[in-house]
Amino acid sequence: MPAAASFLDRAAAGHALAEALAAHEALSRCAPPLVLAIPRGGVPVAMPIARQLNGTLDVLLAHKLRAPHHAELAVGAVDEFGGIFLADHALSLGATGTYLSHETARQRALIQQRRQAYTPGRGAPHVAGRPVVVVDDGIATGATMTAALRAMRRLGATPLVACAPVGARDAIQRLNALADAVVCLQTPQPFYAVSVAYNDFAQTDDATVIALLAMAADPG
Image 1 (cartoon, rainbow, N blue to C red):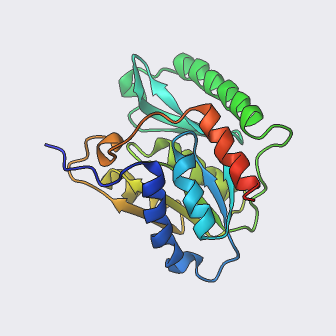
Image 2: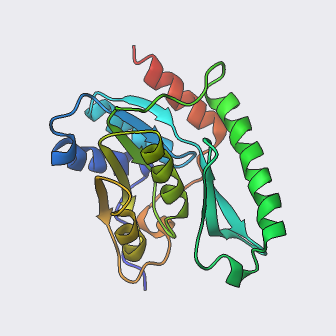
């Protein structure tokens, strides 16, 4: 049976992560970081982190590529900068070249729509030479976070830190090669689902994301 939930909600998980990150050596000598949340669920987690670290909150758009007939299962991910990551198991789950071409185009179109909705009038932030913390509300397969971290590396973010309140142990281990540090508070074994770690895991909608970004931009 799954263990009892570790976090009240995403905001509470963000506060717990913020405490861990504030003391982390990878960020101890840096300027205030750019805190990039993976929407939608990563945004309420990232909000208290940005406040604790005196950082700037923004979003990093990376979407999973859904497995055929299994929309919740990732066979890879794409990022808003044109990168694509395919998992080793993609073909075994029926993700043919034709399927992946259509699914990639669909997710990239959704990414463009979200960027326009979330940060109208501007594109993704510039990260070259800046400390970056990438935040999600949980890591299951690690596909989306992998795509996000690869994009940040290509664009020159330094140092680069990935964090989530909870994650699958094997996925977290794979991410260690992609970032200067990976901070994950809970790695339950066996891993059932991200939602198990939360008492309240209600879906974060676009309106909430937009409101939180506006609040971060104008804290007064």
